[in-house]
Each structure stands twice: as structure tokens, then as C-alpha cells.
Length: 158
Image 1: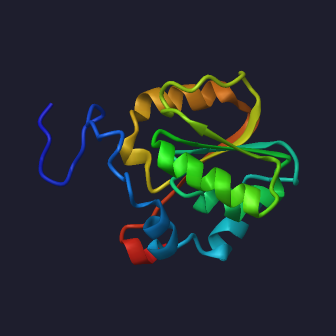
Image 2: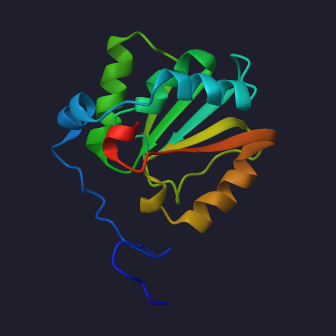
């Protein structure tokens, strides 16, 4: 397969420590997801404030914290230990006992079949082995549940 500049193949590799040392700055300066986007996702996914959210490649938890109130259980996963630790600390400070943080790759995660109400991936799907993650998501999601990819064309687009 020929990959042109600006495109990534299914097999593109990113260093697992690509964002090492940046969690505080990433959290402070990266634009969050607009509340109307979150509200629209909750409506379209028919979230009823129960069930579980799986936030893959969560970074500093922008989706996790924006959506956590709608779920009984939240799993925020990132392959970079610093990011998962940052989310864990932030959840503890906020008293969010239903937010669990996991350091692992989305491709290697083991989740019970048909156990997740919503899987969300924000601005990171391009970094994942997309076919593997999509196939896993189909197994992990409950019947009728959703996979949501949130991103913007530009960093300021939200």
C-alpha cells in the first residue's frame, strides 16, 4: 500500500510514550469538546444515566469527565501511563468513584462481550489499529449500543 504525505495506513506506528511529560499541558491547553456536542451524543446514543462508558485512548479524560455523569461505570483507557495516572488523580480529586483508569492499548484490552453501552474515542482513532479496535468494539458493545468517534479538523474546532 502506498501512503501519501498526510495519510496514515492501518499499520502506522506511534511511539507509546509520544506524549510523555505533557499531561498537565495537554489538559490545560487542548480545547475540550463543546457541551452541545456532548448533549447531542447523549441524545443520539439514547443514554439513560446507567450502563458503562469505555473511553479509549482517553488522554487526560476530556470525554471521560464530560460524560461521566451519564454512566454508572466509566473506564478511561490510555496506553501512556502518565495519561492514565493523570485521569485517575483527577477522578479522585473530584470524588468520582465510578471512574476507573486502565493503562493498556485499545488493541490489547479485554472486555466482556456485550457489556458496554458507549465506546468513545476522541481525536485518537488515527493512532489506533482501526480494524482491530472496530472489530473489538462490535463484540464489546451491548445490542443497540454506540461507538462514537469525536474529533475536529483543526485543534480549535473542538
